[in-house]
Image (cartoon, rainbow, N blue to C red; front, side):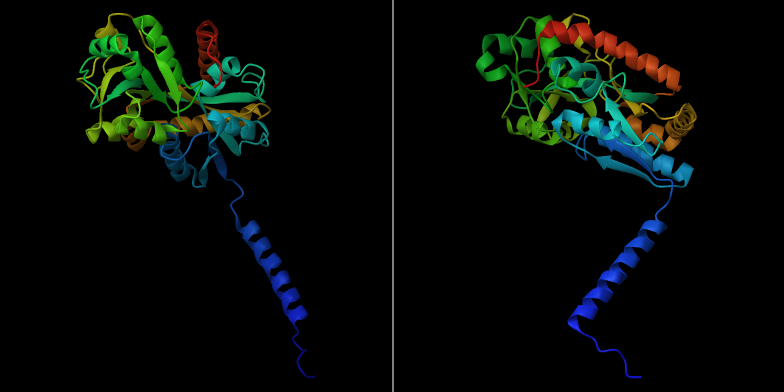
Length: 329
């Protein structure tokens, strides 16, 4: 029998069938147990770096893929909505910063499509880290007191400070500091850490409030200097930089943190298992070393401790945000 005649239509049908079969084989070949950790900010931010450090160690320990997925946009709200809608089977987690849970419910009152208490289950309190106030290298202020004097004398030139997003914790750093110092500061929000750092380095803005780890490259490049950190004590990574309390004479400390969370209906047994996996990764000497280089403090916690911490932070920020009157810009 002669071979079948090949026509354009028969070739297209064969290719379509082969593609479907290959796709099916690829799908079946994927690992059944893959953990996705959603980050609400672009790659390169401290939240992304922290997540990737922990995820890499977890993947080694669990011997399964742990994927970090950046769902940047809307100040992290897109990521929250993604995890809220995810299956509650432990396959999708959220890396939760203070702002999107503790601050946004007030600054975006009535606009959020998620409930911080009802839609998520805390798995582990992963880390704490500090904020700093930096100025462009050309600003003639070597100390925080000198910067305050400059703002009072010439607010049109020195009274603008940047942050990575409106309603973010660095935004409220500026709001709270200005009130305590008795000065007027105008917030300039940018769409992410990278453009905010660029604005500071170029002199587009005089000052920047941000996570200390984020600003290291600009400081090392001689484009900016850190005047103070919002911590209870000096950071060993910046031993010559005073705390705000040391430099300004009033108590001022802000705890910046990340909590891993799962969709609310995730079974307790899965949450407990994930908590143990996170704690094991955070206890790794390699993770401790890499986080220390970024001035990030790893935390060991139970799910109950993570929830208690989360609830306490919600209560702490509630009156501060309300009193500031700050709304989403």
